[in-house]
Length: 212
Image (cartoon, rainbow, N blue to C red; front, top):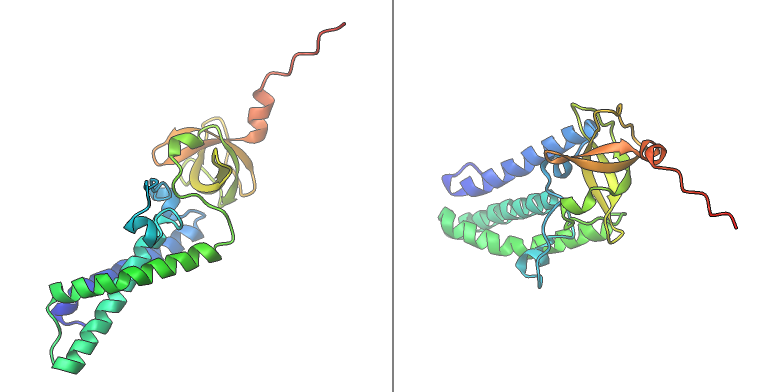
């Protein structure tokens, strides 16, 4: 495994391990890698293409990258193992990398299709962030404070659920899991949110109907 010809595959495996450790740590804090880095905003691809075939828009971008890296590493190690068994020496890393990449593409497409099918919720990973300001939702995971965002679920203009990072507005206190919220602005990669009850209370009362 530690042969110089395996360097690209070792790097890919290291990326997978590091991404998993970071994701687990963020989940423990009530956040997610996609929400914190804005990776849920993968742009739509007109006409599809290779990226759409691989799963772009069906699964979070972090899932797509980790799946591709894992497939690349696994195919690379398998290819080098077969080369050692057949020829007594590994392939050069450029040749092995090219073969591993080609082999990993259909595996990635299959894996992301399975993930998209198994995820028990409707999510959009192609919604523009600007479209979400003013939308209502709920804090899905964690407690949002000024120092640490939480993950919230909101509906986009097409009625699909989108998961984003939120922090409370300056006039609001912490937003606990289950709190109904309204996105009122942006703060870096996260959204600023206020409790929906506060927005409703601030709205003017409807005018009484005219008397006949």
